[in-house]
Length: 252
Ligand code: GLY
Ligand code: MN
Ligand code: MN
Image (cartoon, rainbow, N blue to C red; front, top):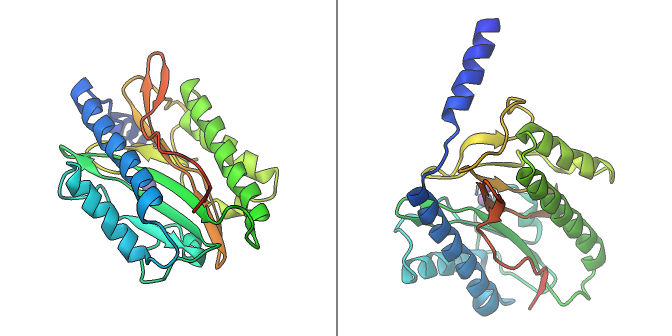
């Protein structure tokens, strides 16, 4: 058992990828493109009456128009209404309507390198039936994410950063609704070591050249869900958010 534990720790640490300057440039480009496409889609294409599949297709079309690789980093998620309550939904022909939450999780590749961005919007100017309750929860997720990114910058162990977010939700008795890792490394693969969760070895900490996502979420089965995700570069001067897309909640 002891031996296995040591092997596991060594294996884990050796698998954490520190990116070169060139790799970082490619990830940066992929993140910039993804943020640009997200803002273009919510600005031009996301209107009541379109389907999730049509929006996912638009995202792909823009990725090709603006120079991303042929293959996306992973299948795009566009989950509206109750579909947003599934952590990994697949776009359907559900028609997006006024008063719907719409969850996006999207990423392009650039020269083989991935980006990973999640945003969520509410299809109303705030007058919808559930908007105030939803907005409180949305703001909580956003606050948890901000705090986690700050802790990343301060070099806190990944497992503690995950725990900190769980505690933040626990204060509102909402921790049962957060059921996945807080984040992961990103590079040539969309999911790389380290994983920001309770299983990450205690002494694995953010360090220069890592690219990590921070993606807290709350999912209320059959109702709605939110996940906000950014891809963040760790430098010796702190962290840089590579996915600068707007976090505006009320749109349309
Ligand atoms: N898009 C996959 C993930 O966020 O991990
Ligand atoms: Mn992710
Ligand atoms: Mn994602």
